Amino acid sequence: MLAGKVALVTGGGQGVGRGIARALARRGARVALVGRTPAKLEAVAAEIGEQAACFAADIKEAAAVTAAARAVAEHFGGIDILVNNAQEVPLGPLLAVEDSAFEAGFASGPLASFRLMKACHPYLRQRGGGTIINLASSAAVRWDMSNYGAYAAVKQATRALTRAAAAEWGPDNIRVLAIAPHANSPGLQGWIDNNPEEAEAFFRTIPLRRVGDCETDIGDAVAALCGPDFAYLTGATIPLDGGQAHFG
Image (cartoon, rainbow, N blue to C red; front, side, top):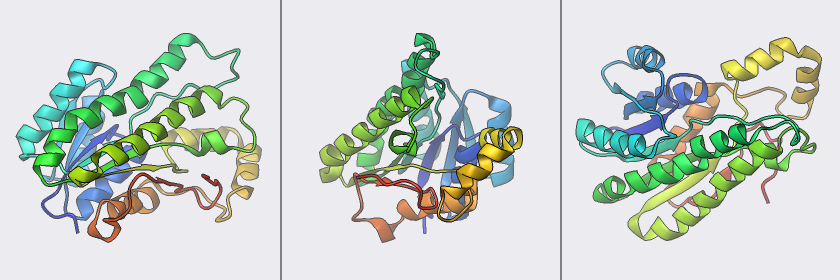
């Protein structure tokens, strides 16, 4: 389904990024794993095999973003898919969230996504189009926003950029989508293990009563969205969350 395609995945060394990268590779894509920690990237690349390559970069740095996109395009001969997954998460009540944490959330999330989308645009256009997947969150539509305000603000900015890019780049045959996943990442699993009663209450708010697997639930959905079966879908936020959230 994705044979011959090249996918750049940020934060590909763990969690959701790893799951998406593995799923894209299983569909035939060659995968560029981009992140700050070479050892993590290399471990995932070893799992995937020769279809994967690693590119160490701090996506909060503008020059590193441009250099990473150029390096990926030079290594693989182009870019067809961009997955903006990496994100530092500013959580906590508003009075407790430091400016530095909020700024890091924006720098690693919407600002990094903004820069990478612009850096990858010429490569996507050269290939006759492509797909950008930005990671959003259902945090902004939670029944209880306590402790999620800063994080939700960051992710809502990413959704706005997604809608704008979809509108502006549609004529270039570049589709831009956001996904809002509940995924059983290492971070979430740690929270579940440390807060079993709260986690059980959380599961009851999900109609499917479980959190998605990073690869088979989230990654496979992303791979499908990047394929020809969804060629007319753009500008939307897809809630991969077992039916919990509603995006109006």
